[in-house]
Image: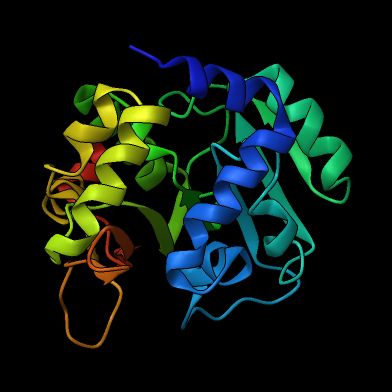
Length: 223
């Protein structure tokens, strides 16, 4: 069930932006937060990028600094109208993340910023399967979202934030092993350690995951 503050934050962009900037202070500010999931990635002007659940373009504005081929996808017409005004250089598509209107092997990079916590567990699997489908072999899926804090000092702040601005799906996500779920869908680690465990920030309350679609066709691709 959505809270009143959550509804207000989505209705008024100035309120959403203020909340986002305040929450991002734990990792050094909004600019760093929006680019956490892009660290150690090689992007150029021709990299085909999908900003999944792009909202009003808060992260899209950073993605267009790396690539001239950025597409934002969101199910909210209001958010997309705002995104078009905020970042006119990107392309935009109105659609659900679990049923994307793109062909197979279309993007080099799919990025999601604090959006997966809004999804039910069944939706998460469907979305990850769709991301795997639209990525090119060797393509990367990267996301940043909430995580169960590993430092007890960060629990009160996260709990209050989720209680005021999020729904029960956010609580479910912080108890979900996203790395294992992504591996089940067919993704592999995109790091030298070969680990799909997330990188944690802000006392473990924020996680960043980078995974890759295999260059070799698997049985999952044929399903």
